[in-house]
Amino acid sequence: MKSKISSVFDKCKKAKRPALITYTVAGDNTKKNSLNILNKISKHADILELGFPHNTPIADGGQIQGSSHRALKNGIKLKDVFHIVKKFKRRNPNKPIILMGYFNLIYQNGENNFLKSCKSSDVDGLIIVDLPYPENKKFAKKCKKNSINFIQLLSPTTSKDRMKKIIKDSHDMIYYISMLSTTGGKLKVSPKKILKNYKKIKSINPKKNLVIGFGITDKTISSLKSANGLVVGSMLCKTITNSLKMRQNPVTKLDKIVYNLKSKII
Image 1 (tube, rainbow, N blue to C red):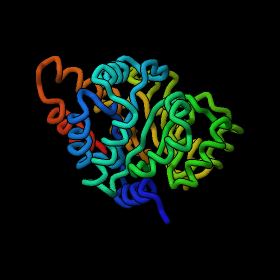
Image 2 (cartoon, rainbow, N blue to C red):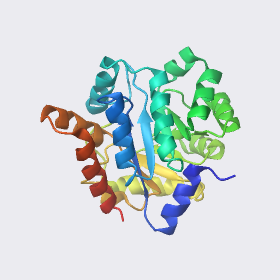
Image 3 (cartoon, helix red, strand yellow):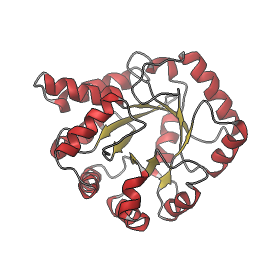
Image 4 (cartoon, one colour):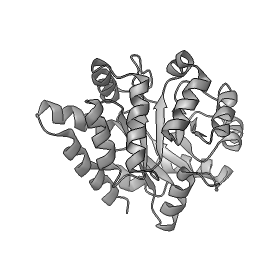
């Protein structure tokens, strides 16, 4: 049976556009608002990434760290993240949700327990930032057994041999980190160069769904729209921060931002 993630990419390819993938942090700025944000932006986003907050998010830049800090300050726990997903899925059963975070929380919870919670909450995929290939092979197999996509990461420094192995073992989506930086850094590489690298990776297996993340904003998104999917995260976390500073409703602001992002890739 085809996964929801796969079905979304098929639908977007038919529409000749990339999938719009958003990233927000679970519990930012409150558990209730976090759920409201997901419900609101899911009208425009094709796939939703939801970060489970961590106190030392090594791959994340200032904006996402700020989101994680707010969520942890509000007392968010892993069980709350699953509760948010479960509630969202009751209203939006066909919208894919990918949880993104660090392996330490999975290890503390126990791999099998964690995957059981993922399955009962209807999580569609996982991105584990600090569990690289081939160390992730065993865990990725467990994910597949539970009908959960384990999303492999590729970067500009991944060797061609290693890339081939990762692509061969990948599930329904692969994440290409566009530049060597933490999230939210300014796009240091031109969209032209990113797409050149992207096409090289796609040529290894054109059937695989390859998405681009890191440094994507409303200013750069349209120049990358030939990709299968585009991930926007730090810009959304920054919008929440600014909304709170201005005492505005972050849910309304994010709805407008994601609508605008979608309009640039249609």
